Image 1: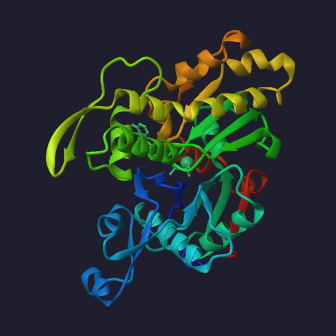
Image 2 (image 1 turned 90 degrees about the vertical axis):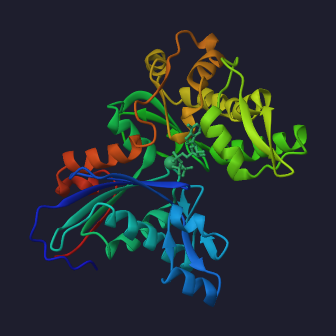
Length: 348
Ligand SMILES: Nc1ncnc2c1ncn2[C@@H]1O[C@H](COP(=O)(O)OP(=O)(O)OP(=O)(O)O)[C@@H](O)[C@H]1O
Ligand SMILES: [Mg+2]
């Protein structure tokens, strides 16, 4: 159990735990991101090079040659029944909390976002981890946090395109239940893989890696008709070459669209028929993956026969879930937290 003196004003945190990135926001102005990875030295040389037992985030990725890299969240969910993953998750969350710079004696209250589909076991496991780190913690579903942030809790659909999964959630004025949400296992990571393979096929002579494919996608990703050519400098036998990757980037980015549209069509039917017209005008894209250009328009165009359909990107897709978590922590008096999510409360 965490043992703060509980003297200061509470430090309130919103934490969005993702497969690839964890976002941390606080009521004192913290707005930070850490890659969701923990690295452990492979052997004694690594221990010497690291001067520590582990390293978190981007720093660990840069040292992958001598570290074992762990992703404690798989498809956004804590890997089940695995002590090492739980330990890595704890190190990651501890690091995330430290980014908010808690002062000795500060009570720390945190709202943590987990994927909508996280099991009860998973939520409890996460709360167990936070017991030693926070005085009060609540686990809530990520799409709900995003909806809370943009004030779209009723007659709206949230599509969160992350790295591991795309989560689509119907907001009906209540905490979303199992039937209100679907998960598609195609998101940013899947696009990266398709893009890497496409470039390898069409440009077998250039050196391509998954990481490079991801960077190309993040810089140039688009769907629909190209507004400009995607021209990228790559390496062939160590020498620079210029490649036109317009077709490859478009094809890879469009691979996630069909399934999103299909699931969207299913989810529209969980709403009352009288509400569906309003719902179709309230479809929101969030998560890092939604920054692919043209995505909102392409999804809307696939739903033409439904009448007027408006698909929008939320104003701040990377931090929308985390901001919603912080907003909830700031607006909801702690005595009501049990009514909204799964809660751990220290007995002090
Ligand atoms: N500008 C961009 N264009 C396209 N994709 C991007 C861009 N910026 C980030 N991404 C992608 O967004 C994904 C990360 O998004 P996000 O941080 O929302 O995921 P996550 O929450 O870690 O994952 P998950 O929700 O699946 O657990 C990565 O696949 C990344 O490549
Ligand atoms: Mg996410």
